[in-house]
Image (tube, rainbow over all chains, first blue to last red; front, top):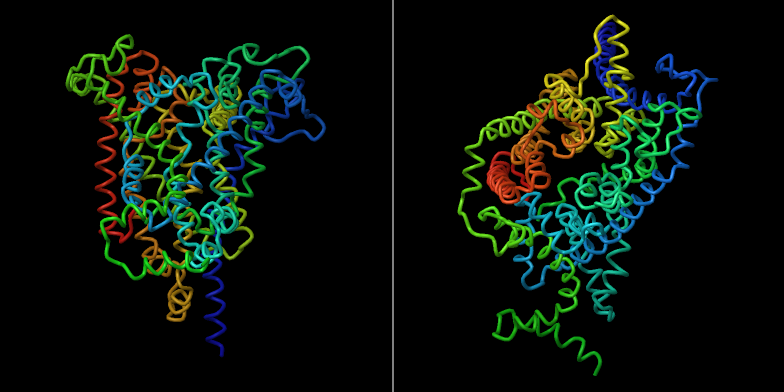
Length: 297
Length: 321
């Protein structure tokens, strides 16, 4: 009796010795990620009167302002970049989903003659690419310079997402599709009425992944848009962040507004916010294994 | 009448398993709607994935924009040899592989430790919270990350330099100092991607049969021993798979990250194949040379991926395709 209590209490003690470092690691990781983001927020809220004395890690509860945000959201260049980003994201995701769904569904039909050849041709493009310059020449030759489609069409289908979706479609019980066919449904109706309603989680996840890619798009707009009025938010953000003189990019009225650094960090956060809103929606699906190991045939 | 037309093709398909000469055409015709659905995708792959492959012929040509892709004269492998013999070749290869390997060697242990800690904590809600926080940076663009890094590292207003100055040190221009830039590149990549990288290990850890852990603990195994003898062996295959596939992509050192963060003072340590291809090809109009380098990289990447995939099949019993 006595021995068991001793061993039990030592076990609890041992567990405590184990639990502490485990949870400490997790707390540390969270701090390492949140502290920089917190500091970005603090700087963005620092008013002009405060900034001369430097940026503190903690905000004074009485001395902060949304001035930097107000400035940006009423600035023509900033709003135009925001609208450009929205156009690219909405147009892009629509094209992505239509192309990916149709192709994935067609390739999920196992009886389709030539299916293996199509799969091999597609897989090859996944494994081998020739780099930037031929892609640039192609877009140029197609006359897509200064066209929103230039940053959308070259990535209309992600091979990885295509294969994940194809596998998902294949795992829908064949019986459901056959039953619908026997009842006289056309292939389009099978896709629209049977397959897609069962695929809502994967459609949302992949749609949001495509959306994130478009929202974050930075390099392709620089490459393909000469017209500065078409540049999306990340390009403007990079210009604001590196600018010695912010007036080149946004109307910066140094006398009556927020400090430059606050404007920069407010721009960082405003670029992040749509991400932060959408993020909890995607996160639900990560651990469901939708995206792990989906590529295998 | 109606039933007859509906059932006829079905019985035929069952009764005649052997292919008759006319059957392939019939099968194609039966799938005409599916081909119609496939058409946009096929056009996309033909134009946007195989089109560049065709245009890549300029790697073997003295490309002159006025003569066009087809009209420019062939010069064989001159572009390739001039790249391989050039003085920047070894530096580019070194930078690319150095950055990639360090990201891999340092990044994977971080992800594994995080995954094990997440699977071992008893506070389920806390674990969820940590997951939410650590996955988040993966979805931020490198431009946003650039902003975050400026908030931390800017020589004038950065948090880190604030601490350095207040303790009497000299501020460091981390993003423009060749010694520090590599640290920033690798550190920020680990900061951004470790949480996301942990998902795959966490999934494997959560898939372990709980009775294994119970049996071991009844036999007197400590939790550390259980991690060593149960958890790590269970994710061994995943570790091998991830490592091999990342080795297959070793020449991708992270273009979008470096492109956003680098600047002239750090080119010597930061310039990788992809950034060089951009500058030579797009900025300096050396289309043929830059395409040759792109093909060089693509071929090595293809070979590495195929080998890595074979190795993964053999050692981890799992593969990419």
